[in-house]
Image (cartoon, rainbow over all chains, first blue to last red; front, side, top):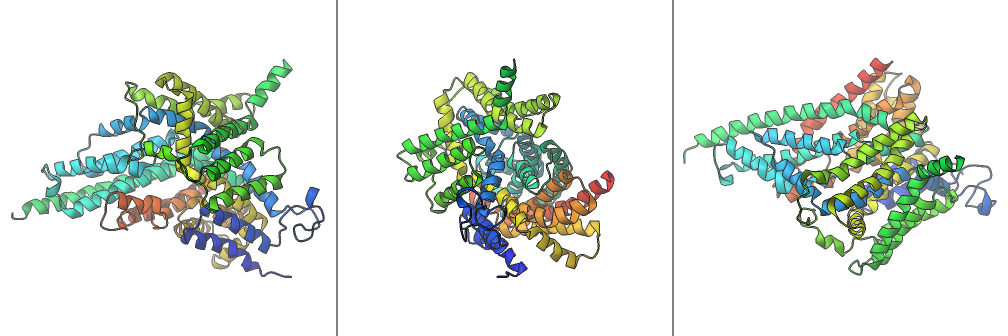
Length: 256
Length: 325
């Protein structure tokens, strides 16, 4: 039976549709892999050992089976989950105040403007990336700390002492800017450490494709983009400050 | 003396580190099994136990056995039988643990700092011994967890029991996402064996004439960003783009250093993540946390940045290839 070439792309469609429907990601990925392999005419199992000569499950010859491939690749990529060994240490540190101490550290940031605070927080996030520390930044830092601190900076910019005096647009803009600074710092900072999953994924996938690269050189080549991300963000937050300053000035000129 | 070096080369090998990880997972599984507040305690324990078996014995088992165990993992997760236990109650709203009051101060960062430090030290020692520095980094990552744990125990005066309970809490919080990178890398391997990459590469060659490096780089970065936007996950997009565009159209024909372009391709995906509601954790959940009026407020703010940094990806990749060759 001849299967048209393009049908092999069904696997990619399964990933796209499965994730869009919010099905279990692990399930979607494995089903996509098996379907792709079958449509490409690969057998389920390698024709050897207990499976030797079984019809349907294997094919004559030495073609590696899909299940064998899955097991081999997963085994080769256990390294991506090695960080589990660090969890007891990190957990213990958290119990004795790691996050609180990080919060104390952030609270010491002294920034004159809202935008300056955003870029400082982004740099803090990049620093955490370099140290290989994973944080769930939005709930742990942005909402309880960075957002109120940025509001404080904006109040100073508007020469007022109450949040009520700030225009609602400004408050909404600050929320967006805070969330963005967390994402920028997280996405581009995490590739500066060889123990975080981004580098390990690239290492594993490239190895699977036949190219063994050094995790350290991956980190090295991540530096230019990480640097550019800070520069571009600094520009954006600078423009943000300018816009908010104008808006706040207009607000204070309003009668009443 | 030979036995001593044999012991040390066994002890400081990837296999030993995998075995240790397996042990930690067995402890997490046992803690889950004993936790009656977890309504899926058996499924959850079975999941982490099975992963522990794959870790500890993966190198010794036939690949098809590992493959079936992976299917078992996915089936348990797919049936919704993995959940977190009552330990989650100890976590405050902001996701932090109630810390014990103490006067440790900034020294609490020390255990965490040991992790990159020890990792790096192992890589250097492996290099000096003429061994593989990648293995050094990975073995180091494993042992850094133990060094950090010892440092943490001494520093805080906490107990091993606390450490494993807290470690299990963190592991449960991440949940089955832990195995996703390894699954995605496996998907990449199956895609390669199925020659999906060649198919995509042929398609792109229909659109982009000849061997125009700049246009191919742009196609690579655009494909990565678009795929990530659709899937909401740059890790899921990377195996497809690496197999379909990066390797066949850029690395192979131009003889480019794979490390140089691979990591930039991954972050080109991150620019896509900044612009998609599919990446709900990063873009939609914060709007809820901060009670924003506009559900897409974060994405709108991030889009100009994302477009600018995407352009920089194309230029950086092109420049790096030009300078290197």
